[in-house]
Image (cartoon, rainbow, N blue to C red; front, side, top):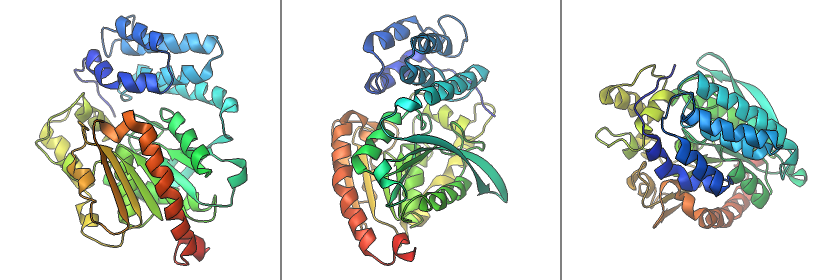
Length: 361
């Protein structure tokens, strides 16, 4: 279930250009594609999918499978609203797997069958494992956003894996990427299954790291103490789901696609579907795991309240960074430094506590 909607390509470029070049695509190539695209949905010269896919195909022909995967990732962006977008995702996966032998850490793609609504759903995961860490220590479970999925944040996954020296298990949240089900509050059941699987890959301790809407799910994992600790980067918590907020850069319809609508919903229908995502019931409890919450003060998608609501909570560290936007992406080195200081300290406490998953093992 998916739909197209009126969306100006130039608006997406205005917002996402820094992300496009920061992930590793050459600036001249991105500029050329930007100049060539005149339509968001047409699968023909001048169309978003066509022009990005043409660049990706050139990279593939040159053997640059990593760049090809990045470009196909932008071709299918921002959501799988039609067959052309779905085809771009399939080609992105092909190129990504061709690039995998050159990754900085050992990689594999597993397909899990996890419980969901009384049945099973397939959940492909990408596993990065430093050889020295295999089966020995904590595991990082990482969820991407509603439009930036596990292959799109590959650089961050490898950086987390290398800097932390820990295995990383990455997945697409429900309603996105490889997911087989729409996004809904029930998606927490899938995340619980992923946490359980991640516990089997190390010493039982799992830290859930979430980015953007993936940060919503990691916040939920932390607040419910389902993970042993949680890192939330730009996650919507409750204020982001309140009706009356203005749509930004098509985000309402990106979310509408993830929710499973087959046509553009009214704002009443959209926010009725989003109301169940509010984490207020968990915020009102006090049994949370240790949490690190980070975002940019200038985020146009997630209100500051959804970061500041964590201030003063037990075992919680909060950073609202000035002069940067959603997920503080333009200050990624600073974010990684914050994580690199918080994570070892938190893991040391968890591993010393017999009440953690490690102690239970």
